[in-house]
Amino acid sequence: MSNVVVISGHPNLDESWTNKVILQQLNQSAESIDIRRLDELYQDFNIDIEAEQNALLKADIVVLQYPYYWYSVPALLKKWIDDVFAFNFAYGPEGDKLKNKQFILSFTIGGPESSYDPLGYNHFTIEQLAYPLQQLCYLSGMVYQPPVYSHRMVYIPGIYNTQEEVEERARNHADRLLSQINLLANSIEAKFELFVKQWFYRFDELPDVNDYFLEYLSEDFELNSFGEIFKGTAGFNDWYRSLLNTFKPSVTHLIEQVSLKPADGSKYDAELRIRVKGELKNGESINQLVNENWKVSVNEAGSFTIHSYQVIAV
Image (cartoon, rainbow, N blue to C red; front, side, top):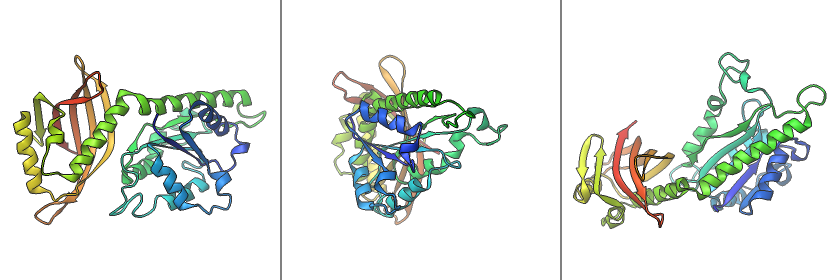
């Protein structure tokens, strides 16, 4: 299983009715999950930046687990983000240390689902309110996964919910979170995302010899790059030479989103959102967001073959 780090942002986990249950279930269910309790580690809010960055570097999947405070994260978790997601670590010219790690928001909400609606008293959806953290993920080069959240997770004795109700919701929440972690770590989707990471890692280098890429192309391969068609390995070679003539080495491909769905026969449709950053040989810089649509198949050994590859400007 992939290495998973869970950052617990509850300011007083021992007093929690729900986050404590969720983390206990995670701890009992998987050995490769590193749970970091910020309330125990940093009661004085003095974050050990090096230790926290090292924990993130070891992880393939990063989970932020927290109660929903005023449409955001608790103060301790916000301080952790501010300190740990530092210049030239999470962003900046050398800030690629979190690139392509999976990012999951997991949080508990006190209010009912109906309140997070244009007609409800909170007016906005949870997904809309999560945009700042989604952008944090994008800027740091991680892959944003659908958040895991649960409503009515507050217990006020005699007034709001019962202890049994919120603890049962917490167990269900933990089950959903574990399912998502296991899916990312062990599924064909996870294998494909690893393949995509390796593919673009090689593209970042722009090697003069492109044999690595040809190995994964089918005999009927077709590439549509902004409307220009290239067929077969010969077509791919022509397209690749045009990239070598256009870009300087050390291009950066930030994988913002990846999805894989079964298609016709034994093939899969893949949808990717990629941000391309680099310098052109004419001296100009590029920072472009593109959508890519691939059609792929996978053999019994788990190796992928690309049948078609489309690049579209966003």
